[in-house]
Amino acid sequence: MGIRKRIFIGFISLAMVLFFAGAIAMSELGRLRGTVHNIVETSTRSTEYAKLMLNALQEQNSAILRMMFSGGDMDGSSQQYLKGVEDFNGVLLEATETVGNRVELDAIYSANDAFRKVIEEHIASVNENNDPQWFLNMYMKAYYDLDTAIKDYMTAPQNSIAVRTVLLEENVYRTITPSILTLLVAFLIVLMFYYFLDLYFLRPVL
Image (tube, rainbow, N blue to C red; front, top):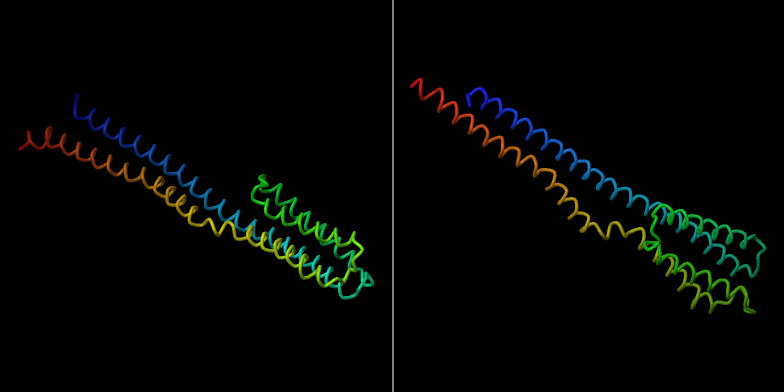
């Protein structure tokens, strides 16, 4: 095989290596970008839904407090309460449909069911609406349980930042590995060129 063919095959091999390494690097960069985008989107989405649920919960709480101290519904507190319930359930349903997996929202569903049950049982009972013992012993506990469940959902992406960091590091390593291998292969091919040039050109001339 002549030196021309050897050099041609060497250049073709180097071009193919560079092409496949570039393709692999682009694929891994796309995967890395997708992972980062997913982390940011998940955190933003959880924060936004949690904010809306907390606002709806606060609206219900305000209505309950107004009914407690007014002793009735003179100021339309019941309508405010029902609106808060509707807003909360709407946001929770939208979050469930967006996530596609109710497991992340199970704690909120359970706490919300308990919260609704405490209020409905009290409304259906013969007790007065401004019963302070019910408010302190049952309502406040159910309210804070639901509030805590919502805040836990909001901070869940931040709590898993260590696991996500490991995933990002793995993606970075997968991205730079093809480039390192390409440099090694290119170095070997350059050494081969030098050897052939030395063997077939420099030595005969010397």
